[in-house]
Image (cartoon, rainbow, N blue to C red; front, side):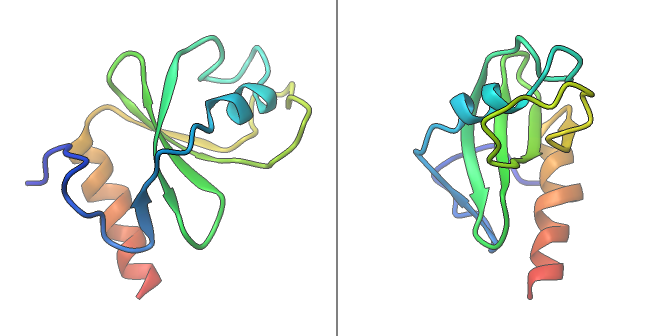
Length: 103
């Protein structure tokens, strides 16, 4: 089972990033979004689309498909966000599946 460790290389199409995209996320989310008013840290990105992996302040993870809008989406549905309670859940159910689809 994979443990959360930024020293381990992620399988394509994911890669670790030092780019801080929390400001962009804040622009896009409205008060009804599941990440509203939560502190997040950018961890990784997909090289082939606008999916970004964030570490959420409660030590869960969120994969967000950024829209690159300068306005918030008030309905809470966008940007599309999937939450994962643990690194293992994220790795098994998202990162490895994305790798299979990417190859």
